Every structure is written in structure tokens, then in C-alpha cells.
Length: 91
Image (spheres, rainbow, N blue to C red):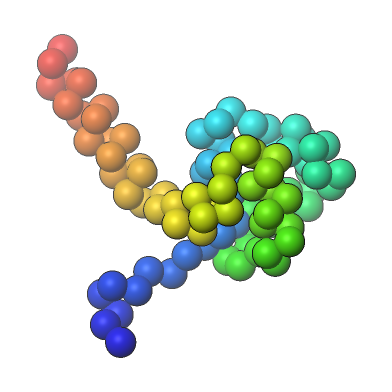
């Protein structure tokens, strides 16, 4: 197996990033799922989230489960940083 092509997916971090990009607070997501805010915070720290819970989260955020599983926070951050740098160059 080629380790260069294998990326570790951190589902909790991906949920957090997608939630923040959508402007959804922990409390709002917790309420939609019938959880408390602390559980959402703890889920954000988990590398792997149980599929049934991940599906509930995806439904609440109105995104496909695959979007959470395949989201690359590093790449997203890199793209946003590059866009910001390009904008600064235009000023």
C-alpha cells in the first residue's frame, strides 16, 4: 500500500469544520440532534464517529455523509489562505 495516497480521515474535525463553514453553532446542532453541547464538542474530537450518528449529523447539516468523510480540512484551509493572499496582492 502506498502511504502517500492514504490520508487519515478525522471525521470529528471534518464535522466541526463543515459546521463552522455553514455557520452552525454547537448548541444549534446539539438541539437538532437531541444532544447536549458537550456531546457535540466531544464528537468533534473523535477520529471516527459511529455511522448512525454521522448520518444524523449529516442530515442535520444538510450535507451527504460522504462530504463529511471526504472533507479535507487542510486542503480547504490551504485554498482559503491562497485566495486571501491573492486578494491582498491586489490591494
